[in-house]
Structures are given as structure tokens and as C-alpha cells.
Length: 276
Image (tube, rainbow, N blue to C red):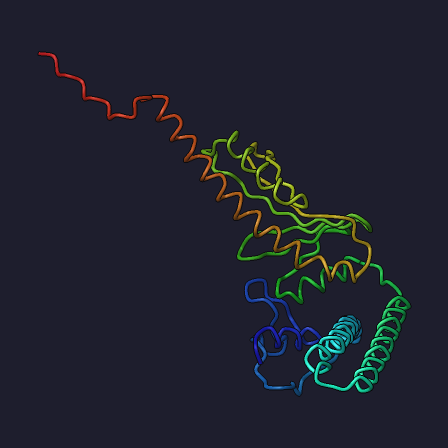
């Protein structure tokens, strides 16, 4: 089993234990799971099993919709290659079957959507958020009723949720040597490329300059969270990398411009003569 498969399996067990440095481990051994297929010490967590069942059902709905769409596509592409060689009567027969198959597929697709809509939207809770973060392989630490902290590669990420508004953010303390005007220009450039990302230049309690990256929107159901959470994390990762890239480019342009203003001819400045 891969590490990802192991985490998914062990997350359903009451013997699980979260280690801040290593992630999910077995509470009985203090080590990663060491088994193939199934564990004889599994003690199923019913709440986790229910969550997993719900996520699997969501996946099955999407798979069913994709398969039915593929059937419809095949039904209408096949005649292009075969009907030209058939008789008129056979063509009409096949065309009738294509129409009937398409109608049947659309009815089945409509049935799938009807069943999906009957599924009640499960309200998002902070406990569900913490469970989802843990399933991603991170260690959630609940701060209070609206805040959760978790680490990725040693950096602290924060999740805020207040029954409607959802946000993920991370703060980086700057060294104090950055050009803040250029830093702000780079932030504006990155935000112009992705309106979901916010980049703010702030001061912390120690009066140090801080740059904050955040992504958020209105989220109220578990299905919305499952859909958006991985994308929000990816947006943050990309925004952090892009901010660094754009800032370095703008600083190079600024230094080049300053050098041109100091020496507009573009020729090397002659060394001054030594006066005796």
C-alpha cells in the first residue's frame, strides 16, 4: 500500500494517532502502518466511516454521469464510420436505435441528477474541516470555534470559518530589507491574475513587516468544502511562488533603471585621475 492509501485506511481507525512531525501514525505502535490490504487491529470509527461513505457516494455520482455522457458520445460517433456502407433500411434501423439509446441515456442521467439533488446538503462544521485537513496528511490544531492551524513543510497555515465565510491564509515575516513599494506592486500584479487571492502587507505585534496570502469565499456545505479546499491550497502555493518571482523581476528592472539614470550614455564610467 502507498502512504496515501495507508493514511486513508488508518484514518478510519480509533487507534489512529497524529504526530505533529510525521503525520498519521498507529497509536498502538507509534509507527506508520505496516500491513498489506487490511489490519487485524482495526477499530472502525463509525463517524469517519460515514464521512468516507458520503465521499464515495459523491464520487459514484460523478462517475455515473461521466459514463452516461461517454455512451451518448459513442452512440453518435459510431454511425460516421459504418452507415455509409449499409443499406437505406439498415441505416434507418440503426439511426432509430441511436435515438432510442440517446433518450435512454438522457433519462438515466436525469435520474442520477434527481437522486443527487435528493441527497441533503450536509452543513459544514469545524470538526469536518479538521477531519478533511487530517485526511490530506496534515496535523490540524483547533484554536477555537472558528480557527484551525495546520503545518505544511514547517509553515503555519490558518483556516477560518464562521458558518458562511471560509478562508485559508498564511503569514510570512519579512526581513526588513525588502523594498515595500516594489513588494506592493508585485502583490497587485499577482492579484490581477487571480481575483480569488488576496495579498496584504501588514505589521505584526512586534512592528515587523508581514506579507499575508489568503484565499476564501462563501462556503456552507461539506460538498462545497470538498470541492474547493484542494484548489484553495493550490492557489496559495502558486500565489506565494508567483509573488517571489514577480518581486525579483521588478527589483531587477528597478536596479537596471537606476543604473541607466546614473549613466545614461551606457558607456563605462572612466576612473578618476589621481592628482599629485
